[in-house]
Image (cartoon, rainbow, N blue to C red):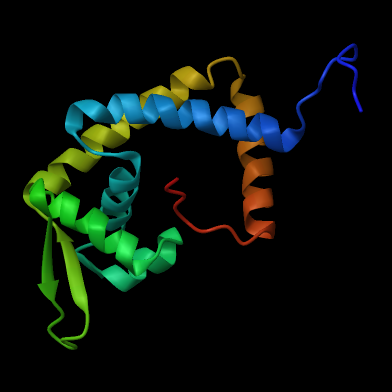
Length: 152
């Protein structure tokens, strides 16, 4: 047992968790003015990049969240006028989710804001260091079969 005299060194996982937490807090703060949470933003961005419509089951699959959680987030975005939910034309058991004009207009603005936060947060790294970090983290993500869109 450590008697407190030796310096405690945080491991790689702890450092990554700390960096992720701090970045998440900055994103949350930045998104607050738009009344969108980080999880809601992740879904809006996924929808924007996916095209016209996307089934909620696909959103759940791509984010690693449950269908129930996705349903709640979609409800929140619908109440804000950012998405529309409609029954699938081909299968009534499924719902298709579509961004409204308001949602389509909001996503690029929020993307610009989150990119600026990333730029500021990682400004201590050179361009080469950023590319290396991104490659390494992508390799770890792929090797561990991580979901496309982390939302938590």
